[in-house]
Length: 323
Image (cartoon, rainbow, N blue to C red; front, top):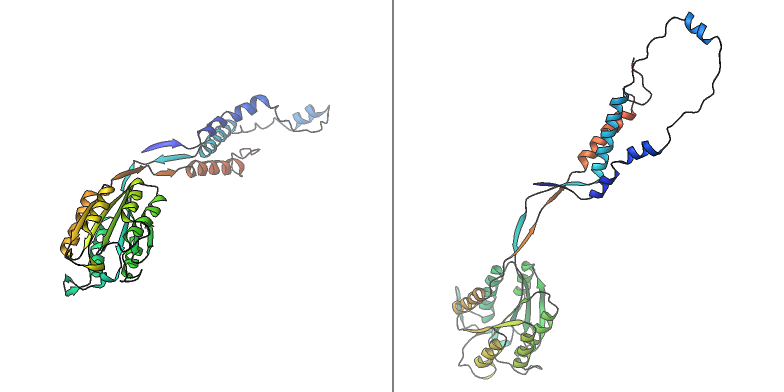
């Protein structure tokens, strides 16, 4: 614990009473004088004068000086500085890109109650991933025939999870525009201020005609410092629009310094996201501060008490004589 003054310049006011006493003329109360030649004889007939009790001048002056010191100390704003408090915070912006094409409705993923859709399996794994990234800002992009930001970067992960629960297949159209999703992510990251930028893209198909080819979009994202981790879901042997272009996803991830993981079941999908966690841990940033407690009220209360004592009706009041 340390004591300090927030406004130490106020201490320059301490010699002000002394300067006033030295530089200002003494106060004299004006009055009229009446000369009485017989005053001495009248005083002698009245008997010897009674001695006047000494006024407490020295005590009053000392208390007035103490009151001034307390007032100046209050103006100097004393504070008590507590020991440092340190908190660990994260420093990454992470975008989750989720494929909502029509094939994500396929119920070919084994679950606890039987077969479930690919989207349900992905949603469960994403929820676990979000829970592990509690110190990061997370955002959610969904894509199909078009791509849009479902949730901007936020630390309100409860709101993010609520929006994730509302996502459904074909919500953004039946196709798979991977390049457009990466391009949208790049524009979103362009406005981010942190350096740790991650895009985790989950898809179960290949690009079906993005306006920006996936390789070109990945190059743009890489130039912005975005690392892409691609997670593919489904059967690599599938044909048609449901076919997986694993080579393209490998190229996208490698172009940005990321990685590509393929999952054919919920366990492999969860393992892919755990590996991403291990490869991109939330950086520990120590934020330290020292709590400050203002103490000006104590000297101010002392000044008010002494002022009331000196200006009141007690024996130290100005002009008061002892009985």
